[in-house]
Length: 315
Image (cartoon, rainbow, N blue to C red; front, side, top):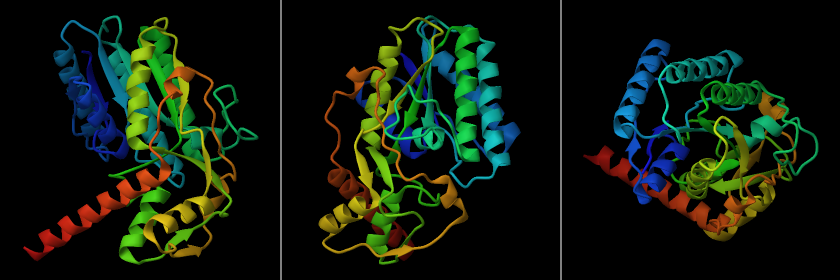
């Protein structure tokens, strides 16, 4: 089995991918990275890559880059530093010989790169166009990955991921509407919504996304080395915020407390972000987690975390 390093293993996608790889009995490498310190993060990434090469031996390795703290409202300077960190890391990786079959997966954002692309639904054939520094940074990171593939021959899969949700989302970030609705249900505190209720998004459960990534990396091995592949990873079902709220009302037996407000970042949110994938369609032929099931799993996880926190506070 090909040793795989999940960069960003502590995040929502990273944790899901570690679970999926473990279920498939794939050797997994993880490495703590202090992202707030540029020098320390570079050194940690170099140590992680050394550990990956050791685990892989003379065989191929895989890197799944699931890192990135930026969101739609993150300042451009912070996002640019994330791009530079990725570029510096791949420069380091490129200096080491890679066995045939080695591969890189990059988690990108469908919402970020298609926000200015015209009319939905968006496919991989659409010309990507961002309307925010976040989307611009994602496109720059994608290009770094493609350049890496061209100069090294390492297989590259860029996954343009829909609105990811599920247990373990970082609620300190101003993103993840499903998780914030679930927290509002448990806490009784209202949630602010800054866009129209007919805003349409594609919600993909984290475990489904992780399975798609693993299958995509396996499929990548049948492509010509050095030819990067870009694929949308999505449920391919458009859901309005109004419909999402209705589903949570059905599940929780009460309407979520919603406050309609305004935000300077609302200008970066387009009305319709429905997605369709036309690349490797066989990867999409799977049973996906129903939205209601995924919302309940997210709420149950938040409840467990709240109960554990309460127990710890009483000790």
